[in-house]
View 1 (cartoon, rainbow, N blue to C red):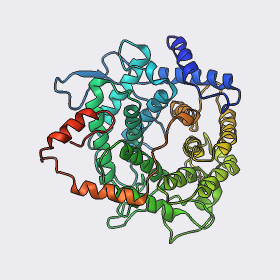
View 2 (view 1 turned 90 degrees about the horizontal axis):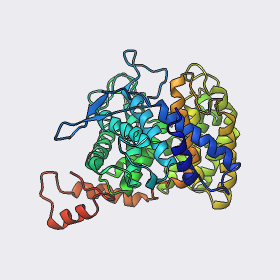
View 3 (view 1 turned 90 degrees about the vertical axis):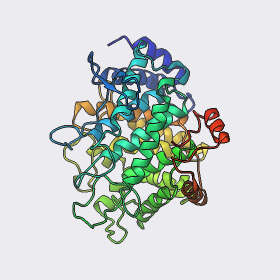
View 4 (view 1 turned 120 degrees about the vertical axis):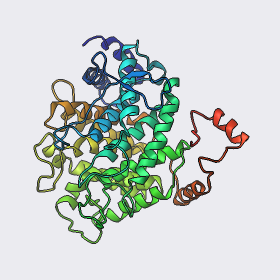
Length: 441
């Protein structure tokens, strides 16, 4: 249990956010050390001989894998669905790489810390698009595969952006990123956006879920920033579904249904406060709203936090009066932390202090965070807390305007097909920028 402790203490002393932003720095540094140690020990699938053959490995070599499955009430044939396993693992792995200094992390099996990170990366490469459950498509009325795709995409992009991908995994990571983007685009709901819950009836168009669509947009914007090709109009359509979900009060609907507005329950500010920050942030990054909308979303989170807290680690899913699911709790804190970053500098400090005070209130005795009744999900809650804690040093994707996205989409239509031979100049550019700007296969 203590094998990681000295290592983590040293790393965290280098990685921790600056004291002028954090109240009681020592308290949070100690909490971070315990949280990271817990996550490293919580990885599953570390038994001797548990391994997976990496996709695309010409030698057929076996690679050790490890995961941090998210556990909720939803099951498939009595098992945790692969979307939860992939999404949970991606979130924990991302929290670890964001919490530790880039230069101090290596993905080597002989290094205790690196071994855990490497197992997590191998799991994502192996399982994130494993057919049929994680491929293109949607199963029955409820399917969380795209939640896993979104979180995996964001994690792999950040790994590459931080130059932390092992050289022998770089090609596989870049290929997986392209495949995840393609899968998300193919799984887009007609009309735009994504949702984990869709109508079982054929020929019935399902509405988008801002809860899923907001993070998907943010991940795709990061992919665009890093040069990955896709039709930018997908992002525009997605953002319009979020924009159409905003009702007169400023609340964001649970699903985009502008012709069925009640303003109550799900649609009350109390019921919407968890998804408002990510929704307005995604729109802000593309210039489709202003800072006042983001500011209002943050105000709604703080004003109605008590309703989120009442559902934290509660039973059931969407219980009245506001139908807040427990899994919205740490989701809301992370995306609030991200949205705070676009506020004027003088406002960021106080908002961040207030957010961290709320997170400290819900820390469990073992030094973890959990918004579900399942002990296993402490990994998810703890990871989301670390991501929120380290959000000041985690860059948001670059801002972009609608016209640029439209042009990006148009350039994809005019791009050479896979079968066409690239020019010598493009080959040279691809070698030069192989890490920062991948070239499509």
